[in-house]
Length: 225
Image 1 (cartoon, rainbow, N blue to C red):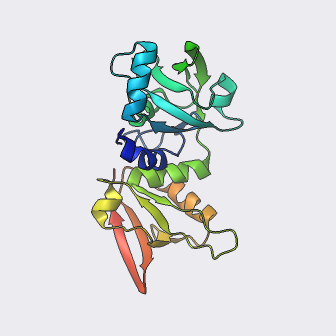
Image 2 (image 1 turned 30 degrees about the horizontal axis):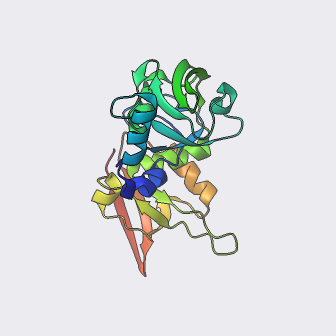
C-alpha cells in the first residue's frame, strides 16, 4: 500500500481491518488477531518521525483504533501508537506486521515496540483467534474488495465500495457498485450471512462470486491471493 499523502485515505480503507494473517498462512490454522485498525504512514509523517525520534527514514504502522476487549487493549496499546517493531524485527508497513503476526499464530505471546510522544515503549501481547465476522471481512480484503455497510433505513444491498489495486478482485474485473448475491454458490442476502460465507472460504483456492451489475447477473472467479 502506498505511503504517499494522496494514497493515505486508500491505505486506511484497505487496512481498516484488524491486523491478521497473510494469505500464505495454512488455511486450517486459526487466524491470529491483535484487535486494531491500522494504516501506513504518509511521507510527511515519515519525515516528522525521523526528525523527532532520530529514526533513519522514519517507518512504522499507525494504530487508528484499538478495539474494546481485544488483545491490543489488554496489552495497553493506544490510538495513535506507532508500531515500529515486532519481536525486534522492524515494521515498515501494514503488510509486514500482518505477515509477522501470521508467522506467530493465535495464542502466542509476542512483544511489540511502539513510539509515543514520550519515546519508545515495549508491550507484551497475547494474540487471539480472530472472530468469524472479522475473519469474513479479512478474507474479502485478501481477495481485494471491501463491501460497504448497508444504509440503516435502506435495503440490505451488499455493494462493493472498494477494489484494491493489483488484487484478484481487480484482475477478475469486479467493479465498485457490484452487488454480491452469492459466495461460492451460497446465497448471502444479509451482511452477517456474507461474513459467514467469506469466513468459510479458503484463501488457498479461487473464490466464486455471483454478482448483480445493473440488470445483469454475472459469475466472477477470483484467483487465490
